[in-house]
Image (cartoon, rainbow over all chains, first blue to last red; front, side, top):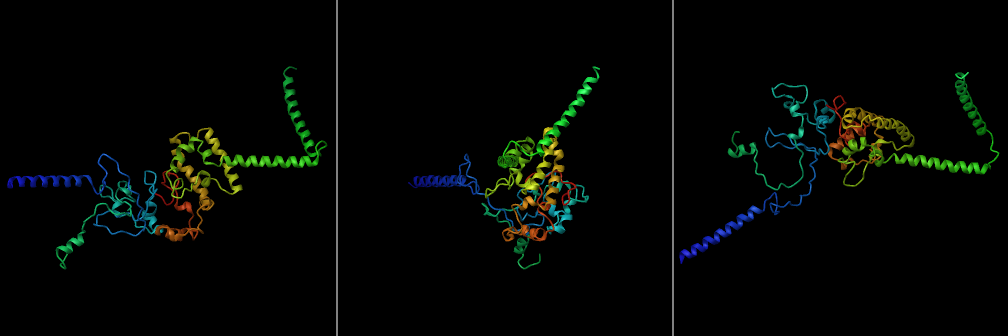
Length: 156
Length: 212
């Protein structure tokens, strides 16, 4: 009798477990409830963040994000729209931050007169930001916060 | 004798032509003896209306996007590039087509530009830019012409729609507001100085001031 009861319990547990697992597998935060073999409706496009205010970097090496819209900016072999403001010679007029001096360095560590060709395509690293709610939350903690947590009030 | 005859005939032709011009002139400067003055005046007025109307209608036909893109030079190169820009599709559905930016709206300036454009017809007939490669080679030169024209008329074709007086910079992004306040309102710069390549792709910009 107890064995029979245990078996029923086990089966019901398994059934419950698999159904919840299945349900988990089918709804993803990114895809929504759309089945894997279907293409869901595209989410509406969100506006660009266009405040022109510098954003804090999450870690010192992070390429700074672009705090303005860059719609239609041409960056190709012929021209680079970004450099019409961010190039050294243009910053006086534009008051835009100058391209980092590290970008003048070629792969052998030699500083060139202007942007090194390997750093020419700005949007490979620097990206504009959209005003949107991230579908997945981010629990990234920056180094200053982490150090102060490890030794509250102590020396860093 | 037989050799002198065609020579005499040719001289006679020019002489006859000269005499014809003289007779025509005499007719034109002498008063009419057949038509009534009223008929001449009304007829002249009607002919003038027809001529002027016809001329302007023909001029306006050459001032449409359809006419501009009837040549493959325009249709396959610059028109394709325009299509993805905000001057072609936008939220409010206002479209700037070719002549809005490239032909002055003022009549005398328009006629001057249209006379210049006869060179473009020549270029089309003799295939100056009949391939993509030729177009790309000429691209900087063509763009420089347009930039010089915009610079010379203080970006008049931009200002036909975008006037500095009716611009509300509080509705603009902070970046745009600062730049317009510093350079546009003070007259230090004109639209084309900063807004190059907004409707078409840019050529190789090396050597163009402000570009690298």
